[in-house]
Image (tube, rainbow, N blue to C red):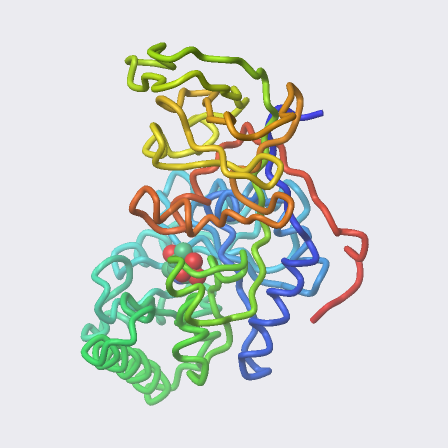
Length: 380
Ligand SMILES: *Cc1c(COP(=O)(O)O)cnc(C)c1O
């Protein structure tokens, strides 16, 4: 049995695919973001299941993430969202990956590689990250004239689609107009429009009507939004895919006034019982949960973190929890006898978003698939 592991509920993943697809016009399909090891879930495991339920397009951040998917037999279009250096262009060709054109100068470099390369063109409409600026229509047109670029897509990324504040909605609508304007200009000049995409997870909920071919969903596919508040108030019906569980390595008693862990940061105020867990910050458990900030669930009861979280281990208080023994399971994220701790809650405890908690989960966690028996049934 494993030391510590991530359980992936495949029936929940399929449910989320259906929920999200159901919110979109039928001409628009999911292009899941499986970057950062599918937000810590396991890129190969998740992409394989998505392939099995009919998903035919993915996005990753880095060319090597795309290579890993291809080496593991993932089918369909794989878009690399980030910059790729010319030294790595051969991988795009060898593994049939699609590269994002991050701006005009990148297009020139990609075009001069000498072989045909599949691309999507990024347009910057206000994020000021990647993409040729939407105002530079002449440069965008020049990108479209590049002979060696097979342009299969054009997209923009919006930076406040998650907000329902009216000034943010104005900003987003302006981005949408700038993007559609670029598309109009291209059509006017006789170019056939490739696949169009602009929404990520929040875009599906706040701007479902936008006319696009793909949506780049990340966090929602994994069953939540970025914060606990949003996850509750949007009432999406999405179900979390991942749980994180670990083994209790040891149970021991600690006497009053004895310290526990590094830095003597915790001092027992009374006689207590602690459990040592086989998971630490190298597995992605935030060290900020140390000393009572966070807790785990054991037999449905909360066990607060005692002392500082170590690289590979952590200690929790089980004083009030009878019958806990070596080899038992502790739940770090997920459900334990009806009690639940969510990734959003962990994120809130350390002042971040669920995306960060999930994407930093370590490679050392084994990935266990559960409820996967229908894996070859087509859902879409
Ligand atoms: C990560 C990413 C996404 C997915 O974002 P979510 O908010 O997790 O859905 C979409 N588009 C781009 C460009 C990204 O980098």
